[in-house]
Image 1 (tube, rainbow, N blue to C red):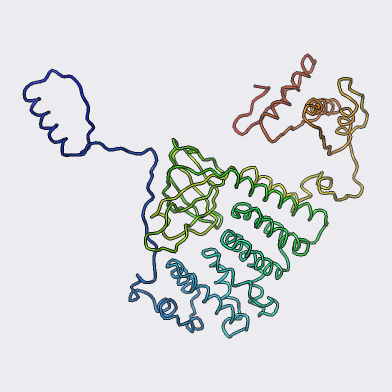
Image 2 (tube, one colour; image 1 turned 30 degrees about the horizontal axis):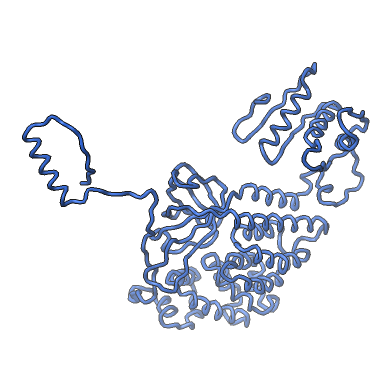
Length: 495
């Protein structure tokens, strides 16, 4: 029972007086004042599993021979790939990354020499699949001989799953720093072909998980850009150039923005596992809406970091992962995490750092990827990409009457818009671009029965065009009825 002292004036009986005196006497010996901090200041204590705490009598023979006895000959006789993957996960949960690296090296050495039982690619597929749990193990793949020297089964598996190795390197980049460049380049040089979708996924993952702009630049200009023309599908060089350079620019912009806009929360979070999404783990958390930056939006880029080190390890490093807000409601949020999650996820406290929204960046990635993979879906893609299309005819009217309210360069812009499928209008602030755009709309309307869609990066920009347009058509006999469309509402006219 917890009470708080208070004083009031009552008309009471002698029995009530005795009862209150007894209560006062009790309060002198019982601490009744509890202060609840607005934000939790102390991170939860936790410990990590260790090999020294294992009861070996409860473990399988395969686990005992590999993890305790270091008997690597058992790798030659194990006939259950699922059992081997389970042992890998067990060893990883005990923090024995060094042991896993040694196991990887021994298996890869035998694959490289076409050792009996290793030539069909099954063993190497296990190693590749496990990179999602331990990306650091990808370091061993850079030391392999040329893939063409492997057996047909092993080389096919390596080529098919090469993007898994490259994604693992990207997820390790913050730990490996500049040392990630050489193995990344080595593996990339072994790849014969890569789809534009996979290439885009690699660059997008880098924009979300590589924290240093300088490391991202090294990966781009020492690895991805030199190899892009070789590994991407053969086609128009200008289209490939547009595709890769725009992807790189979008990624670098977001990495710099995330670095500049990092905002830590003052409170600690508790996370719990949820179902996976697109191959990445999901976690859920309760969010205090009264905390600074308490309301998260779907599509926000965040970094989750363990708030304290484990109590039973003096050499441990604070675990962290980049994530996107998968969904957000008042008081709760779900995060899609790009790094594998530790076993102690629900036992420790987590810090959250906001890196800003990824929604616009994602839209730009998708637009560049769609334009590169489906150029026929856009009738003016050849103008954007700089490619050429034979026998292209413009079916727009070319008669144009000069508008007195516009200067010569503005009239030239309106005439160009009336005669060409793509027009780029540029000018410093205050040169009348919005007024010119309004005249373009009116000119297009007067030259035919057209429906015109006006878009802009912000709602304010569209509203500005809409307002000037409505002022310009006041008094016309046939008053146009523009439709304003936003994310949440669609109304006739201008609000």
